[in-house]
Image (cartoon, rainbow, N blue to C red; front, side, top):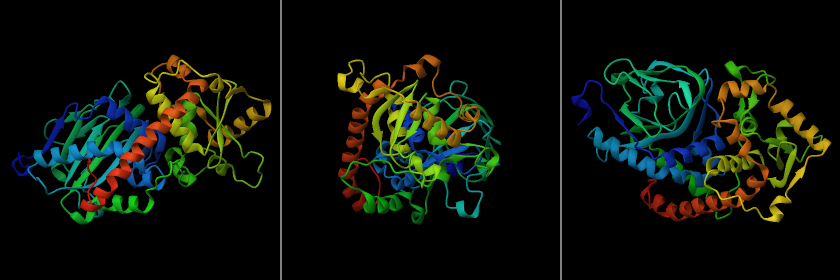
Length: 387
């Protein structure tokens, strides 16, 4: 039905995104996100993935974006009229909320015609609070459920709000659509991909350190807050050991952009990671795939990579935590607990993590191969689509 025939044009699609697709997007967000545009909100944009040398991670979005665009055009009777204006992963943590607004309520947002919010986890299971509410019309309230999508016009016919999140992390994929081709996200992304796409293995490169520093209430005091990359490792039971600790010329924040190691429970994985994002991506991949990766048969040389920590190494870890996690309680207050129980967290160990690195590399190579094979057609048609 066309949008003009309804007072409040909107639709809910149940189970539109598969559980596995949701988990993969969660992995990407928890590996790559930065501090967001609102208090206690974190975001991952497609342009940011390209800028941090993870362009291959666009591939999991391709099919979802294509399906949503087709469904949006079908639902609102505007076939072949729409362009994707923005795609981003957004998580709302404890304290995050937004009052009544329409999605085109600023002059610089007037190009937005339609909105889609895709829920990657579920209300009262993964987080509390965070209900989506429309000011008028039905449904009046939407309780997020994993895989569901809500679509609506971006104008004042669909003024809405999000209740404050009181616990956990509310994960969404947000997309906006426009009829104005000058705001087409695809052409901008393809231009950036054309400049940076390489056949070399893509190790992630951190953005500026302030993009990863969370301050409650936007407090500029660096002693209040935490680095979200170190924090996400901490929540899974892992700690960071810098290999640049002896270089006194380095600022503390620079120790995360160089070689690091991962520690847990008095042990250290001797394998070196290029930087904090490299380590975080591998650890989050491990968390995502832990139940299906067959890591029980560990080779002897893999076991040899796990060593007992020395006292100087422990001191280095504690010194880094003092800088990047000055208040560990604040981390769990904001993010909640990513593992459903303590046993799951305890099951993540350094020996299996070492084995998982190969699986992560294979996954990365698979996505990179698909990206490189798709890019010529994307450039020809100036659209990001399944090839």
